[in-house]
Length: 353
Ligand SMILES: [Fe+2]
Ligand SMILES: [Fe+2]
Image (tube, rainbow, N blue to C red):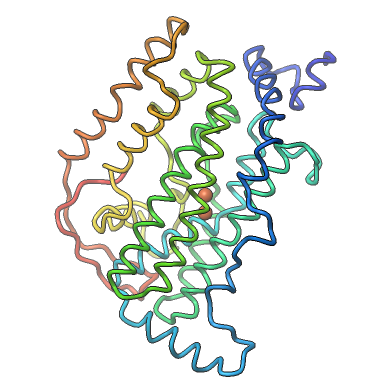
């Protein structure tokens, strides 16, 4: 039988464990914090950039010149840059999977789809901001004329259809560890693609990637703050969730992408991203270190026995990954349908995680 408490806390069911119920109570207690900070963690719509701001205006007089200029600047982008840009765009375009994940975290969801609760407003506001990322990169690539859009669209179709499992098991603590990690990872990736564009002389793409990276940075801050609130209220539970996610390893959102032509698309994309320094094993190690520092894991006191063990594990983890990143190497060319089956030569590089 459902108790009054389970009815009111995060739509819990009688099957949910007492630990899950306690977690849902913590998540509910953070709502006033979310409410208070929503105005700075999300940007008002009227002050937000939109994809059109960065693209040729096809309704303007002289649109042909604008488009001609746009394509001329994109003409010399190297294949490696195109591949990492496409991979990042495909990742962004699978947003339906990520909103679904967010709404599955117990207590964080949007029960009606238009709920006024702080968590629901965060979930929809975050999704609305993220939605511009895929739109902008997709239109940039389409207008550039440099890539096989049908192969890319097929990849997106497969990815959304295949889905995405962040291995958070609907646990909101694990969910916020995951999102803190992943927003930082995407920030790094977009920023590095922007740097490559700058080096290739494509200032517009540089600015586009920087704008997106700035959004990711704000979202990273938000999720770190949310998880920081969890650490204040339930430090042992928070440490255990952080350790659990690190042992499971952070699954990349585009893990299940495929183009219907050649196997191992995500692994091939990751190797190119590693090679060009867009997202590397060293980045993975550094993100762990940054989160350990953010949540001041080393200084947490009064932890349960199990959490104290994981505290030690977490504090040494970034260095362990760093060593691993330096050791393992691989070689070989990679081929992508996205760029009309042209081959990219890989020098000896370490694997991305
Ligand atoms: Fe994004
Ligand atoms: Fe993001």
